[in-house]
Image 1 (cartoon, rainbow over the protein chains, first blue to last red):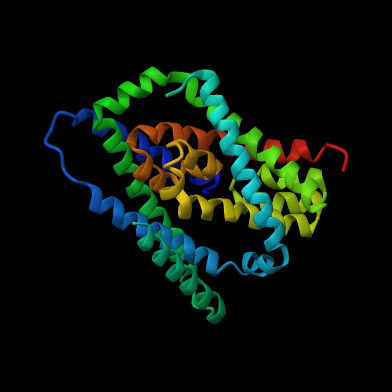
Image 2 (spheres, each protein chain N blue to C red; image 1 turned 30 degrees about the horizontal axis):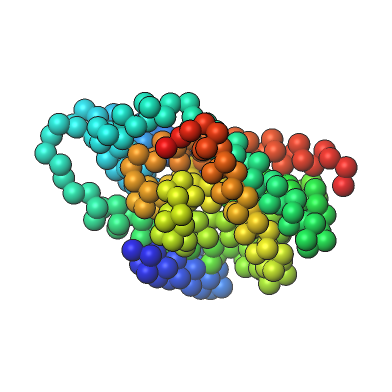
Length: 93
Length: 202
């Protein structure tokens, strides 16, 4: 997660990308798959780096790990159930 | 794809751990600059692919404001999950609901829950929300087979940045705006939800 001060890091490139993509929608397509793949690997590596360097998080793991695992799976399960119900109600395909 | 993600994550955690132990001052560079640069590149490219995809734009027009239903369903589902988890584990139920209202934003949920409910639940808030982000990335290729919106429900607040690239890669470019608006709305709700839940008797 980014904090709100760096929200600009997401919104500016997103809007710029959508607008440029829309402007060039009729041009010849370039395969950006390799760029996306490389950037995802770098992103996940740097995210992992932040986790490994976070002593507070690593220290809390053994103490609350079991409770956290139970809660997170329940949270994920009910999030999915509620989203699927909501999709049916609003008839979103 | 998933094996490269696991490898990158494992190597990153190991390198970060060594860095933390030996005090080499590269953490700011890696988890600051490198993280932000790769995120900016990814979000730009995904925005570009979305903008250039005529079908994706048309689908979004048809869906319209319905995408706003997602974050509220995810918020409600997460808090219910926290409530049931608290009852099963015999921990402070209100605290467990507050923990689950972090929606994956562990850097905020950990300290905020810790301040309101004490250090133990703060640590729980940290780990639960960190696991949510991690499980979203690790399971995306599997859970997308249930429904292509399941990874967005898994990701919670993280779908506006850290898990957005992986979700769009597996769920398709037409899910970009749904995932982003879901993450953005939930990020706005996190501090409000946690502090509101903390006002309940506990």
